[in-house]
Length: 530
Image 1 (cartoon, rainbow, N blue to C red):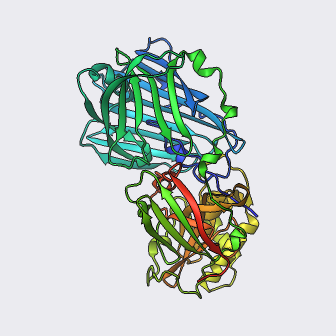
Image 2: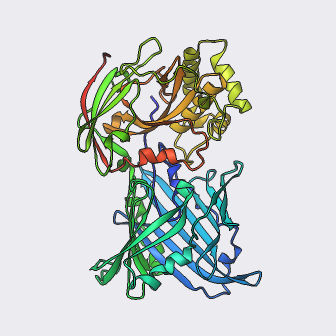
Image 3: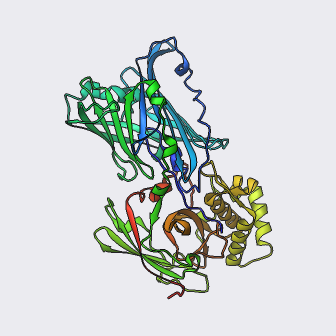
C-alpha cells in the first residue's frame, strides 16, 4: 500500500517560503543548489572593497550542516550611491536516510540610510520548483513578482505606511543602537506571509555564551520577533553581539527541524567539517502514539487525546465538522473523535450540515487545482466515464489516480494538477491535487485536506494530504494515495482549503505549528461505527 507521511519545514530570517513547499513530502532526494540570482550583477564583482564580508557556520541541533555568507558593498547606480547586500545560506542534512540540500540567496538594494529600494529572494530544494521573488518600492508601494520553476509569474503590491529596511540596515542596526535603547521596532518584507510586518527587537542583558572556538565571552543578547503572527509561525531569533554591535552568534528554532545556531567564523571553517550525513531529521515530523493502531485503514471510529504546548486556544488546532469532533478536556489538551469510512448514505455522526448549495469556490480552477487544464479534463472524462452520480464519479477518480499515478520520492515541493497530469508521478500532494482537479472538472466540488495519517512501520502519525468532495450538503473524504474509496479513522484533519489565491502557502503553517508541540494518545479505536 502506498503511504506518504513525511514533511520538511525550516525557517530562517528573510528566506523561508521554499521550505513550506516541502511540508508533506514523502522524502527529498539530493538536489543541486540554486543558481545565483541575476538581478544584482554587482554581487559577483570583486573590484569594489566590501563594507562587510562575513561567514557563519550553521549547526542544526549541534551538528554542522552548512554555512551562511553575508556580503555588503557600496555601488553607484545612475550617479546614486546605494548599498547592495546579499545573504546566502546553504544547508544539507538527511531525512529518513534521503539527503536534502537547501540553498537560498536574499539580496537587496537600499539607500545609505537603509531604506529598501529593491530585493530578490531565490530559494530552492528541487531543480524544478525553485521560488524566485523580485520586488521594488515605487510610489509608496511595494510591488513584487513571484515565480516557481517555469510557471507563469504572478504580481502583487502592497501600500507602505512605514519605510522597509534593507539587509545592510538590519545588519548594522545593533552597532548603532544596542547601547542606547532597550527596544527597537523596524519593518521588513516577510515572504512566507507575502507582507511587510513589524519586527520588535528587544535589547536584553549581557550573558556568558559558548562560541564555536570554545570561548565563553560576555555578550549582549537581543531578541528579534515578528509581530502580528503566532510564534509557532514565526519563532523569535536570538542574536548575541559584541561591544561593537557585531553579531557573533544567532539562534532560532526551525519548526520540524530543530535548533539552528550560526557562529561567526572564517570561510574555511564555515565550509569545512560538515557532519550533515550524521543528522537525520525525519523523526521530527512524526507523532508517536502510545499504542499501535491495528487494521488502521479499516478503522470506523477512533478517539485521540492531543496535548498541545504553546497554543493560545488548543481547540483551534483542529477543526470540527460532521465527522470529526474536537473538544477541550484540559488546559492544554483536546479530545479528537474521528468517524471513518463516511459515505453519502450515512448521516454525519456529529450532526452538522455544511451547506445546502454547492459551494462555487470549490469548483474553480486555480494555480494548483488546475481543473480547466485540457489534460486534466481528458483524464477526468477517462476516469468517470458515463457515471452521473457525483459520489461515484469521485470514487472512480480516486481509484483511477491511485491505479495510474506512480508514487515516488519527490525532489520537489508541490506540483500542480497540470504537472501531475502530464507525469502521472508524485507523492501524496500530487495525488491529492490531481484528484481534486479531476473532480472539479467533472462538476464535483472538492477541497484539499492537510492532516495526519497513521504510519504503521513507525507506529506514529505523520503529515499527509488527501481531499474531500461535497455531496448533498456534506463533505466526504477520499485518499487517492491509498485508493480505498474512503478513509479510515486513522486520518486526523488539521485544515481544509480550496487553495484559491494561495501563492504564499500559508495553509501549510497550520500543520507546521504542530511539530514539536504535540503529544498524541489513542483513547479508543474500533472497526464498528457509531
